[in-house]
Image (cartoon, rainbow, N blue to C red):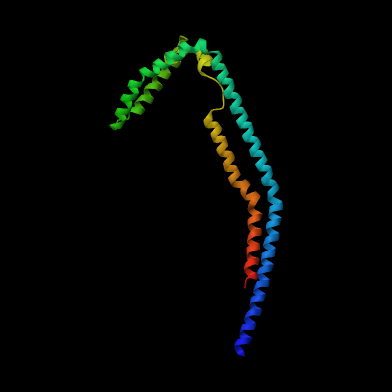
Length: 197
């Protein structure tokens, strides 16, 4: 008989614990819904902002690269000689590049030497252009602008912007859109566990 009374008191105690857990679960559900109602609109707004920024970046990337391609195609007949000259110079520079690479393999600071050498040539080139108006290591500015330079959004900048947008979606947008859902599901799980005594 005392065992039956003990089991009854234990069951009554479990009921009170279950009622308390159900109350906490309901409070968590309400808090989650409230959080969702407060944060989801902000998350949706920030999502819209990121989508607009990405579309604008994609548009600028496409238009500027298309314009540059058209410019280069229009100037190709004029620039072919300079492209060939540039390619020839790059081929001639392959031998120094190989020597620099080998020297670097043997532990010599060959890349630093190369950088210093080009900085020295840049200074000479700048002095010559300022005083005599000739370049020794660059094409004239008019040729560079016509054949080599074009203002466009580079692929690296486009990828960087896409990564920034993805990071913004990961944090704070996803937590804003789903934070209250997690709290509500936690409350539902608490109620389910309380009812399965």
